[in-house]
Every structure is written in C-alpha cells, then in structure tokens.
Length: 157
Image 1 (cartoon, helix red, strand yellow):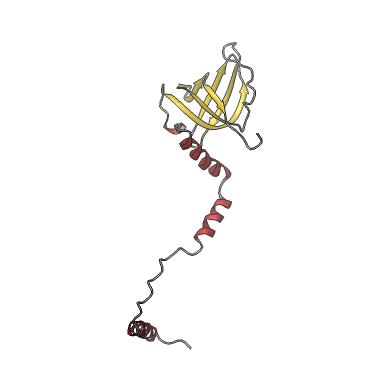
Image 2 (cartoon, rainbow, N blue to C red):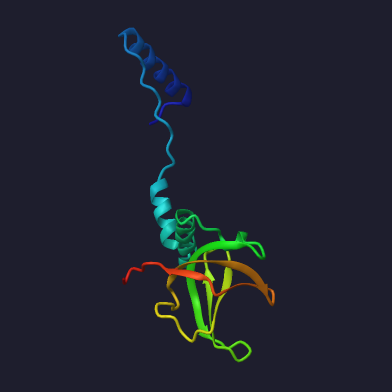
C-alpha cells in the first residue's frame, strides 16, 4: 500500500532535516539525462538511409579538405570539391571524345567532363575524388570541364 503524495513530501523533508542535523550537506541532485539517449542514437543510425549516412561522412571530408559544398557553388566560380562519383560514361561532344562523371557530395551534384579522354584509370563509379576547376552551367546543370583531380583512398586500396 502506498502513502498519499503529501506523506511522501513529508518523509522527504524529514530526511533532509536529519541530514542537516548530523552536519552533512544534502547530496546535490544529479543532472537529468535523457533515458536511452545513446541507445536512441544507435537505433537512429541503424535505421537511417545509407545515402544520408554517406552524405554526413562526405560533409566531414569536405570540411577536412577545406572544400566547398556543391550546393553553395556559384556559376563561374573557381572551386575545390570533394565527393563521390555516382556515374561515369563515355559521351562524345561534337565528335570529340569526352568522359563524363556525376560528382555527388550530399548537398548536390555537378557534371565533371574530361574532353579528349575515353577513360581515366581509377575514375569509376563509387570512387571518392577531390577536384579543382571552374563551375559553369550547362543546360541547367552545373558542370566542370577538364578539372585538376586527385583520387582519394578507398577501403579496398
């Protein structure tokens, strides 16, 4: 059988008075922690979309490489970008061989076009890459022609 709420408050006050009578200071209340916060973070990470997790990792890489997020690039601006190649295709432009790739960093995409190239060793879908070049708008899409690029290490390397 449980005592009424008023009795609980009276008992609590009595314990505080006994503690002070013995010359002891009452214990400080512990800071409130959200129950299961670590567990909640773990489950949210497990249930998250893989693209969201990859986007978060890419944002950390962008900051570490002092690069610019694709979503913040302006037309005709010299930029340094870090991201993952989603697609790589051979598509001639006006009879000139051209290798096209789509770079994604979690904030947006940009088409990367190497004119005069049929393939580039190491440039393949899923590869992480850092590049420098000038952003332009091509048929409503951002593009960078013949960038300076650096292939980033992958897990299999």
